[in-house]
Length: 309
Image 1: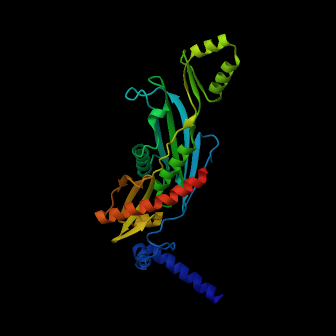
Image 2 (image 1 turned 180 degrees about the horizontal axis):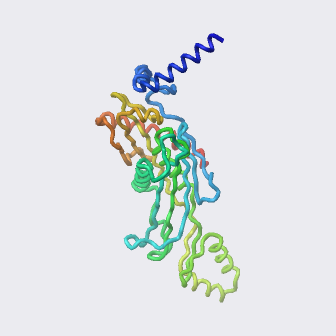
Image 3 (image 1 turned 135 degrees about the vertical axis):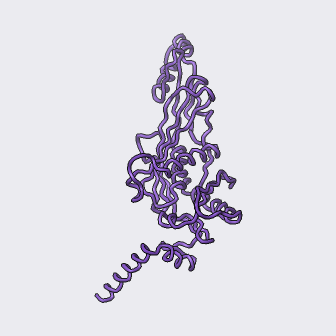
């Protein structure tokens, strides 16, 4: 019983010391090349990917990086294309950080972090050419697909941008564009209706078949939304001259700066992001961040491959 009291007292003292002197507490671990959760400074957390987790969506994916959890879902809608790009579809990306995901998140208007993640995920998907917008065209100048990609962070324990990018990739890869047909009156048939129309036409006599062909002006085949490109991002924190790979939310609050590097399958750098911070990242530090992101890509690619195998 005395030992139990001593352990409880020591745990309370450690928790109080961590709360009152967070930097001193963290520095004691970092000096030994470790972190409070037991990881070395350069080790990222385990990652897992699950597909098809939302039955009402056209594509979905759930990603966990340690405790950080992000759910992405895709919905497709037939809309008129823009005047600037009449032969292309488009993607709308929204990243949400609801109050339930973190104690620091408040209800109300969209937080700066959520807006930042939305812009960066959209930029990464565009720059890495994850989706070919021309493949989203149904009838040039008349109809195209609009892809609504929503990412909801369920648990914010650091590096939400990394989880959001991976979840967005998984949801797009899980999504398949259905068969679409457009008749001469401009009526659009999607999915089963378009397929049934084609089957009925095949079953009719030759004269009726010709009439059907005259009425149907455009037909698109069923195909995947995403290409085979799967960009992966890794966030690294700068702390008193040291690099902290894949920091947790508690660690992020102590970092002097955060650097996020996104690479594609070939190892090419898609984006290097540094949203402010008190410290300047040197070329050597950025080079180390890029190397860490390239090493991380294999782990994330394997998790994605396991989910879709």
